[in-house]
Image (cartoon, rainbow, N blue to C red; front, side, top):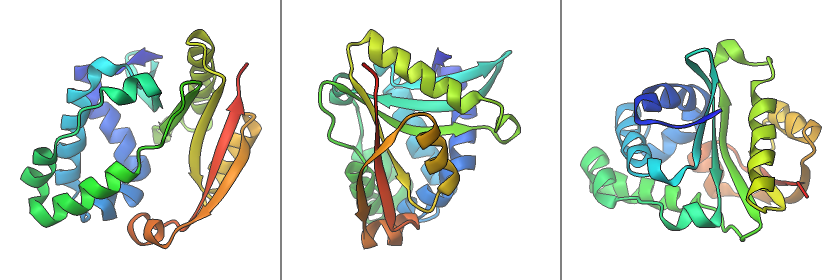
Length: 195
């Protein structure tokens, strides 16, 4: 595992877009290139926060994970001008609004896990398990008590995987807005205690 570096961003985004563009696309008006430029700029602007990590095999990035804490969410930089330059004013308003809503409220004892993804050729080889184990290690070393994440209820494989890793359901949410813009109506908020 290593922190995301500027030279890793394109590989990081390749995995993120391969895994999540079906969910990201509607937020950005299905403008893949514009979404890529927006997210790349946000990654570059926020590299110093230490919240983006890569699983590395040899010299290759094979997995990505974002670990959000109260500390690293306070300094997060997001610029509306980045959105409007790439999507126009109306598209920027929509995307900025939905990506702003995506940010969870985080207490001081929690690490929120976002964007766990593995490149296609390395799936089912323990990479995601290793990344979550590393997240637990980070949580313990920083005095955090729990890991939390949202997973789409229809994503049965991910839900089953998180259960296997020791996560349990905290709450269930049904959202027409999420269904319209992300394709999934029902979401499960999950937690793992890491004392």
